[in-house]
Image (cartoon, rainbow, N blue to C red; front, top):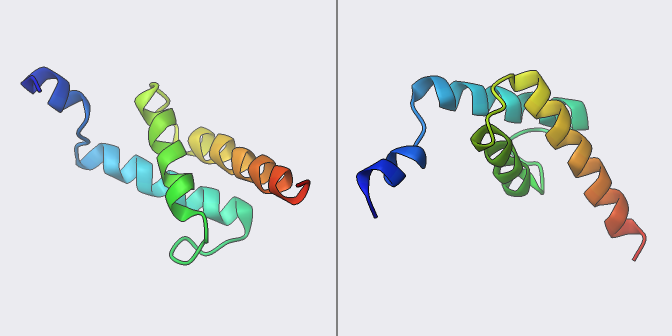
Length: 79
């Protein structure tokens, strides 16, 4: 793996603050505690994907990620 690619896959302290704030806010929007939310890992992965795609507004990331969680939970209940 080249150093350039590795640098793209790491987050600095400011990035982690945005990611953490987005995760906490998304859980708040879902009415779930961030520490014990059953799909916290899935939510975190989606938040990271949005961040990696260039979104930097934690509120926007949280809103999109929470909306996706609602859709996925709804889809799971239809089966």
